[in-house]
Each structure stands twice: as structure tokens, then as C-alpha cells.
Image (cartoon, rainbow, N blue to C red; front, side):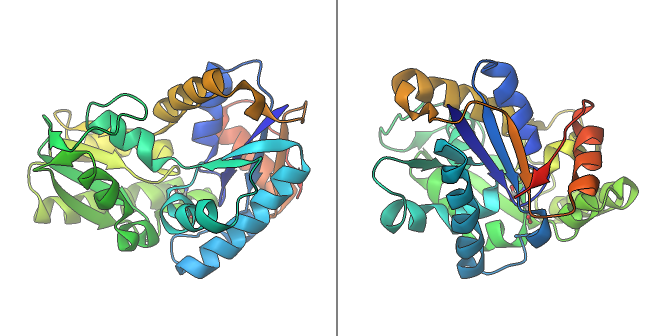
Length: 270
Ligand code: DGL
């Protein structure tokens, strides 16, 4: 049994960390497509092609359920995959909806009509592809009315994190927060709409100010997965071991992952 966690690179490790703490008995297969990161500057067809290839590799590794722990893939490819590509006995779920359900004070799968919520002014930080897809705004519109979303495409941040250049990543985060604040001076909430960004959580929070509630996905996705597996226990699949796969340089990716998670992580070639 194993559940797949997919990202373009290292960002999905923030989700992997939370799901493996929440569900310690479930083996996880992590797939980082580091050779092709960042996805955030690719077009939707390209993201779809790369994501389906990676997910197929995870079916082969014994996963029946794969979480796209990548907002860019969730925004640009998930719907197309679910509509025409995912086999009947498999599932692929994304990371946008659990976050939006938290922001709009809803429990899992609450499909009641959109209503007013407490948060009225929200900043969205995400990759250029996620911002261009407008998937957040679309999912939000199904659940809430009267929420003003200002999106900031955070070019460069994912590359800097993948390269381990945290000084550059911090400088870019500060400049993207400044740019956002010029458009929306007083956001009440900020969504970290890319799974790489929780690695920079403290920099976002400091630049935004302590009054801004910063939402990131890891724990929300973990709760949502625990709930899903409670209702669909068979979706845990046939794989039995934790496995870390990458299309990138195995040594380099293992070193960075070990640095981010502060425990030894050893990747294998995908
Ligand atoms: N961590 C991913 C996301 O959540 C991918 C970022 C990228 O590859 O550009 O969007």
C-alpha cells in the first residue's frame, strides 16, 4: 500500500512531511520532477504531459491514489486528467480545494451554495502558471461571495529554492510581497499557493506583518487525505515502502531534501 505525492520538485516535501506525520502507517511514494522544474513557467499542455508521465510512474510503484502536491499541476492539469485520463480504479486529487475550503470555513466536500465569509481581502502568492489559470478564483467563486483576491505571480522563487539559494529566495519573496501590497495595501489573509513557499513561510509572514493570516497547504492537505482514506480505505494501493523518486540529480536532490526536512532523505532515479 502506498499513496503517491507528486511535485515538480522539492515543494511537495512540505506536504509529504505533514501527511507522513498525520498518517504514520501509510507508506508514501514521493515523485519530484526536478529535471523539469519549475513548472510555473510552462504552458498547460506541457504541465499536463509531464504530470501524467510522472503519475504513471507512481501507478507502477504501487499507488492507486496520487496527490498532486503542486498547485501548478493542480491548476493547469488536474481537471483534464480527471475528465479523460485517470483509469477507473485510480484517483488523482489536488491541493487547491482543501485550502479554499479552509479559507471559506467549509468542511470537506461541503457543496452548499456560495456564501459570505469573514475574510474579504486575500492575497494570493503563486507561480505564473497558477495565477494565469485563475483556478483559485474559480474554486473560490463556487464557495464564497464578496472576496477580493489580488494575485501576485512570484517569478524566480521556485528556481531559487530548487537551487538552494535561500538568500535570493528571501529577497524575491520580499519584493513580491511589496509588489502585492502596492496593489492591495491591507490584505487580511495571504494564501501561499505553491507548495515550495511554506519553506519561506517566515519571510512571507515577516514581510506581510503579524496581522495577516498566512494559509499554507501542508496540514490542510494532510487532514483532507486522512478524511479521504477513512472513507476510501482501499485507495491506499499495493506499494509497501516509502520511496523517493526524482528525475533530477539523485545526490543533489537528496541533499536539498535532507536540508529542508532536517532528516535523512535518499532519492532514487525515477
Ligand atoms: N510547488 C509547485 C506548486 O505548488 C510547483 C512550482 C513550480 O514548479 O513552478 O505550484
